[in-house]
Image (cartoon, rainbow, N blue to C red; front, top):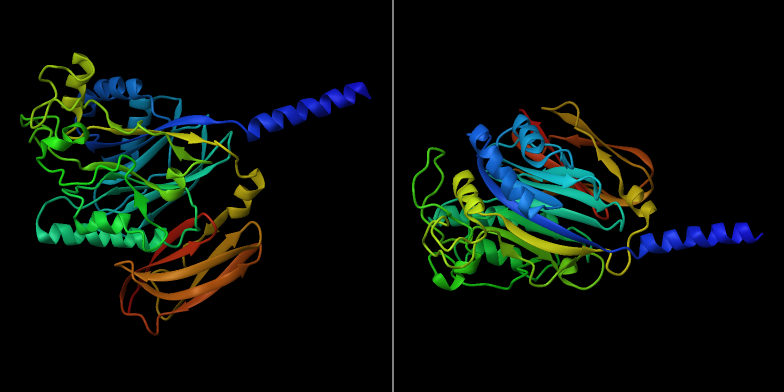
Length: 407
């Protein structure tokens, strides 16, 4: 009897340790400049940089293919990391890498933005079981009115989807946003608190960032003043283009929580305004300064977060949220097509049809989806020829697919 009691107490101790465990997680975002161009020359420098940062999760922009993702994982990051499923969009693409000892990837999908897709990744922590959604974007570059309008459209499409997430969802919006000032409509859209899907700037440094020495310590482009063969921008350190923005739930205490004063631009000491970072004084080391200068026209942005600070989600909740959205068939179609989705357990779900600009056209299903496969018939009668997207939304997941109407 005494042995049985000891076993039970041991099990309870392990379970309580798991439930109360707390991980300090480092997340980075980095525009890696049309990778894998010049990869043979750049990979050793990328390796030096990322060995020093040692992120638990890193998102990248301007990666060009699945083979590029494989190369970056194998030759730069190493076996400690896994790569998320690659999403091949209409331009350069995003990728996410994570330490699989710490995280499990639960879902990968994209939002139909132009000129580049916003990709998003749902991961959960293997120990605390907290779930996090990371949206990765590379907004339209340029400072013309049309460029600003394009960025606003991208931000608006993101808000359509983020506003559908449940209240208190843990999510981030990261990447190269090409924003020049906090009064730009796209930035205001991202931070607009009139609906629940807004994000926050963890460092609360709103202002006119472009060519402003008052923000020299958070500028992310460009570490160069010379034109290099890779074609990257060479204007010196004068823009805050790269961001890690967080949801209110990540800002608030408990669960996943931003750690104050951990957000920084790696390699920027604030003393190189409108200069290249290989000028003395060197921000980290001479070797790292030259590596940052040579591999990209952006610097990485890094922040740290607590996972499981108070309590965590039960493992069964994760399986309850699991679902599969299937490609419609036939596709392209006219006059009708079938859309199927599958949930492991009975759950509330919504299936919505959007046009190419992300405008909601109709709700195809809304209510309690029973465990198993649900099939919906979509008619093209009231649709014009063109590209559309349909999205399945459940408690903490969104999955989207593209369909085409041909008339």
